[in-house]
Amino acid sequence: MILKPRAIATTAAWFLVPPEGVPERWKHRAVGMALIPLLPEEAGQALRGEESQPAIEPEDALLARLLARDYPIRAIALEIGMSVRGVQYRLARLRRRFQAETTADLRRVFAGWGLDAS
Image (cartoon, rainbow, N blue to C red; front, side, top):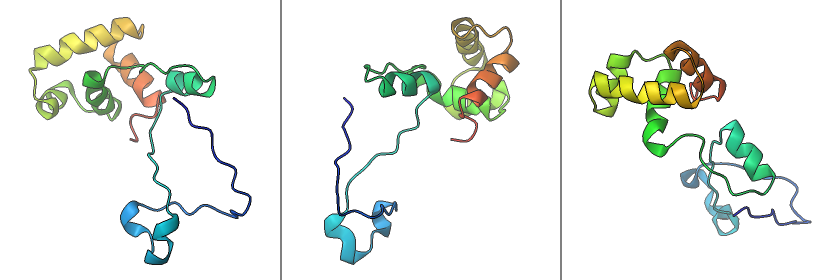
């Protein structure tokens, strides 16, 4: 579900701060928000008003971020708590899904999505 922004005629600017940084004098006017990083495919679906399907399963999201940040496979395995063989299996599945010939190609795909910075 995509919410349409409300038109507030008297608003001159928006001040974006974390919840703990809202000055006391403005707490009654604060609007709750969530900042959600979207992958290109998800953003396109959302902008077209379509139901967005994740481009990558939640269980693979951390693996993808670590790979995009150039972690070696052994470090990825340690970080996500699985065997090196298990990580290699998941990477092989992701390479097929995203038509990447090598793990380095897959790394470039994920880095191109901005996962190396998130």
